[in-house]
Length: 398
Image 1 (cartoon, one colour):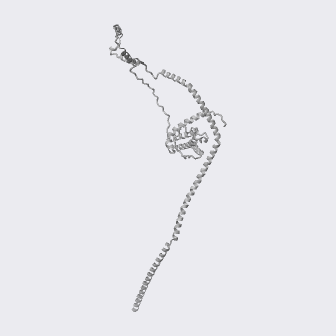
Image 2 (image 1 turned 90 degrees about the vertical axis):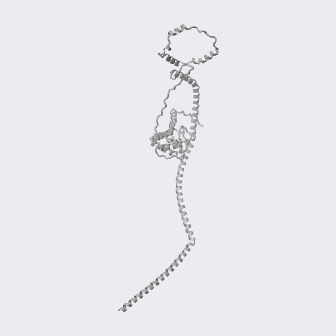
């Protein structure tokens, strides 16, 4: 295997990668503002994406499918019609539809569409971020800068210990004691002090003092003899001392930490160079296979289109076949009815009965006709006789 020289990553590439991470973080916040968890993920029953989903390559097929679904949802969220992409659709057609929707929004695209096939990268994040911005504008969502909370000065409360002497409190008590001019008994006079010194007599020491009680009294009074000075947190001297102590501790830890970090940086850079070289090798070795895979995928899409067209024709022919089968069943039923009626003797019996009935009716009619002829003949004879009688009477008259 031929090893290639490690590629030196430029500052521009590093900056673009960090920009993609930052844009992906902002994109996730914008998607949450658009309620993509309840409106987008609930219908697809998918897990929420994390802030590195479209930046770090993990599963290109799944990431491209998620990118196409999310882009279609954002386009529909902005008030436009966009057909829901399917998992087995042609990626070129899907990318072309997304690019057309992006161009309709007036976005500038200065990169080839092949950059979107992997479903990750700064271009994918750029497309989704612009679509999210357009959807936010269409939904009248106002973005404002965050306001940091006001920092309050830390006030350290110092509890006054009554067992210790506080100089500030002693001064206040002394000022309060000597500030009352109305009470003359509390005024200190120097002359009285001099008189007291003259009147002072040597005290007689008593030797009956218990040593244990003396020690106990000393232990009881000893805490009250301590002097505490109240610390001021706003004093610049205290802050300066803290800065010096922090600087010293940082200087102490910096030596070992810096060497460890440099060693770790070297190891990471060597590992990245190895990964890049192997990635290039794999890409070069798998380039033909990937081309074959793309060609096979294109052929598969064509075969699917043909299959869909043929399946639509088959469905129409099936409907026609069902109609012809229905007509055939009705014709068969009519033929069976006619065949059963031809083999059955009931029609002949009915004909004979009707002929006999007609004969009886003819006989009845003949009888009636004979009766009517007889009546008619009698009336004629009677009329002739009446005419003859009348004619004979007329002749006799003449």
